[in-house]
Length: 219
Image 1 (cartoon, rainbow, N blue to C red):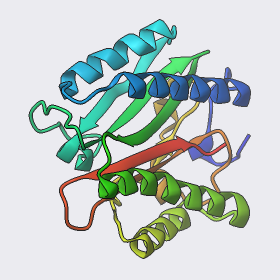
Image 2: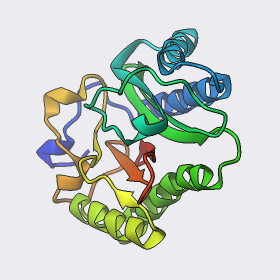
Image 3: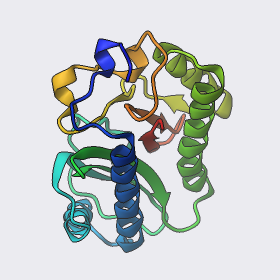
Image 4: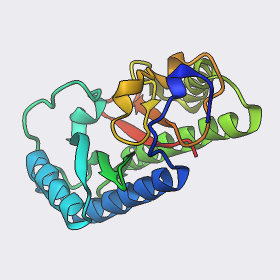
């Protein structure tokens, strides 16, 4: 493993278990996204997500499950939702899950649109496209974490979106990663190794009150 202290892991760490936990997290997101419908309260979707995770035999939650509807898609992880909105017929929402399988931390998030509002559909797609561009930069150019988020901001602007630079990725590993004090990916001054970091992308529409979120493991 890495010699960088911020990439330290526990004795149980396994890249295969990291990938398994990530795959299970994506399975949970897919199942939940298919069950969220217009007319549902944000709180109802969150409770449904907890049931999906339980049904998939997750070991525990390691960060609170987030489901954000409408304008709440602009909220950062550490901000509370405004009210308990109802999902509209032409609306936008995202899911952010962090759960443990095989003693390892899965963490993933994605944005979805209901109906056929072209700008909301484009916003949801743009978060994933921007993630893909930044991940490709990581794979192909072997740049440091700081450079990844400089590049993400540049690309977001070129695509016509605003990047939330308060959201800059973070460590994961065998649970609990927090004992290693890895900090944010966007502040990491070395090349981030595979299987240790979550790349987070959160964008906002330049003029309208909604945004989109996408995150996955750099692996």
